[in-house]
Length: 153
Image 1: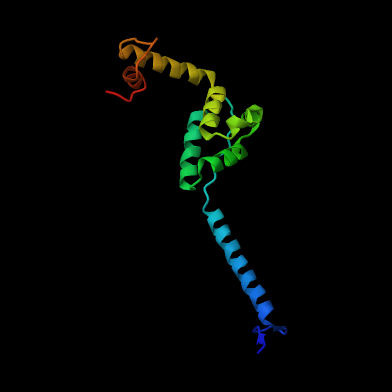
Image 2: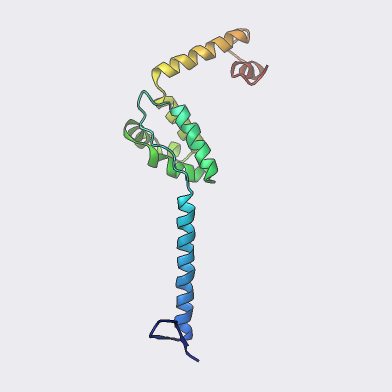
């Protein structure tokens, strides 16, 4: 028995009905992706300028990645899309192994793109904490290191 679409002049066979159902499923999948994409939070762009703090930007990126349920591989794929200017140039110069490891990538960006003033300020803060922990630096133990980084009381 042939099946007709309401308002359509063509008659559908069982085969064409199956194709129509697949098209309908594809349309639902497409709509589902659109809805998910609308609710994906995009990180801000990072240029690596001296007035931008790479550490703060990476923390923001990390929160957004967590909200969007991005694993480390996806983070490695998405992060460079939000780099511009100096930051993008530096990323392009990184070794492939660093680009493919989220932890290594973040560390490399911090080391290279942290403004010198902020580096000096953090070094001073670290030096002051070291002094509060008894001034041990060479051969520092885990206990002393946690004290320096503020993990111990």
